Amino acid sequence: MSSWRGIEEFLAVVDQGSFTAAGDQLGLSKSYISKTVHELEERLGVQLLVRTTRRLSLTGAGESFHRECAQLQQRLSEVEKQVGLYSTQPVGRLRIGLSDIFGSDYMSALLAEFSAEHPGIMIEPIAYLNENEIVQESFDIVIRYGALPNSNLRARTFGYLSYCLCAAPEYVAAHGWPKNPEAMQEHDCLTDRSASINFNDDVCVRVQPRWASNSGIALRSAARKGLGIASLPVSVVRQDLTEGRMLALEEEWSFYDRECWVVYSPGIMSVATRAFIDYLVRRTSRVKIRPSMAASLAARY
Image (cartoon, one colour):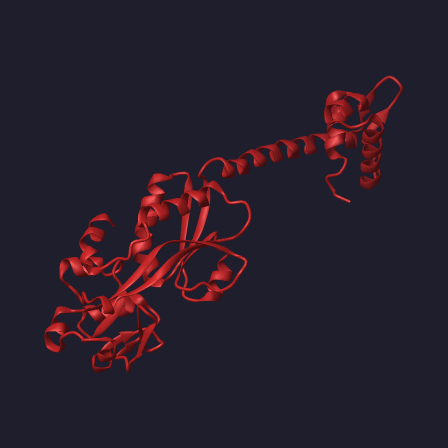
């Protein structure tokens, strides 16, 4: 039996002055109201109301119980109104899971722009490195890339994470660019821990990396120092390409495009979540980004 059962009826009886009036207010019968309040007294082990043929009055325990419950009812009403804003206005907290380098750099710039447009939403971006962290953090939204695992979550694609081969000018001057994917094996490569480099059309080349790291930030730093060639998102190296710290190979075979997804839980979607998803779709336009677009990206973010 619910511990709240009988309290609403009790408050109505006190406020309306009779069981009949309380029943009219709640749309319930007088007998049901009387029975429910009696069961409440039995559950509490105290008498709340003194019933006579002429009037109802509160006992000492009833006065205390009514005062506390009336405050709880008022607070509940306020909480319902506050939570109801989530269904009508873009307000509240959004905890967003972002991957290492793409999330901490490019996506963070998008989040800052979104936050400026929606001051009622508190953005909580959190970088994750593995699947376990996604579960542990209880994100409202997670930004994912590539093929999605089967799950009961919902997802919407909003663009591409486009990789290019990039290196410092001094490395390119000394070693040149590879002519095809297989030629990467002849170069100093900076990769993730898979020791491989992916390209479009399901091409994957295994290499002996000079650097192997699960941090895109570390790989970008190594590439800037001329240690080798890295495959990094154009959006992440946009400033480096624009300012000449790195060069990018413009051959079509050298690119790798992964679909970007915004992943969220099924069920009723808050207005804040909907606003963020719509914003991502509007701002990215599902364009495959190429190095020639770096300057325009750098100017925007």
